[in-house]
Amino acid sequence: MTKLIRLLASLFAVALVTATPGFAADLEAGRDYTLIDPPLYTPKGKIEVIEFFSYACPHCNEFHPALDAWAAKLPKDVVLRRAPITFRRPPWERLSRIYFALEAMGQVDRLNSAVFKSLHEERFVINSDEAAIDWAVKHGLDGKKFGDMLTSFSVQSKVQQADQESASAKIQGVPALVVDGRWLINNQAASGNADLLKRVDFLVAKARKEKKFK
Image (cartoon, rainbow, N blue to C red; front, side, top):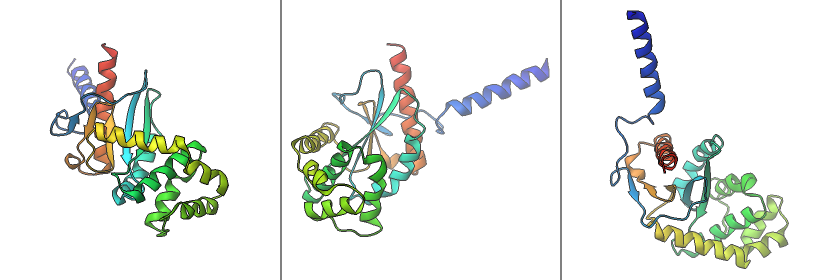
């Protein structure tokens, strides 16, 4: 009987370790995340994680490989949406349009990392739409199609929508992560990228539990 009790205790301890996100205590509003009120729109039946970012941001450049690896293992009820924002900076506005043009052409998965690499490692300067088109051609895209998409009304509208969302969520810097339209994670409370993503997982689990009991 003693051995059985010890075995059950061990299994329970393992379950606790597996269930917790790696913190000694639950995350707290105000300390670990900020409540967004009113919440941002989220797709029905999904738990959405939004990354507000800019290709120009060095911290976003450092973070995106970890985020890509995390996104590759998402469960079916969780989706990641990237929202490039501008902070009303014209160079960032162009980079935001580049992202949405790539998205419209179905090229984000192939070229998202390439944009970061070009800017932060290769020091490719994209200071005009012409330079953006030149970059696209060098990466195998049709220059005219990309240029038309870059200046299209739909792409410009998406840039404005992303900025409006970031204003509603009171985004002060990037990268910024919002879970389920309700919780903006405090990056300063995390010890690094891995810890930051654990906090996302914790809030995803919190959202899933709340939706289950509604």
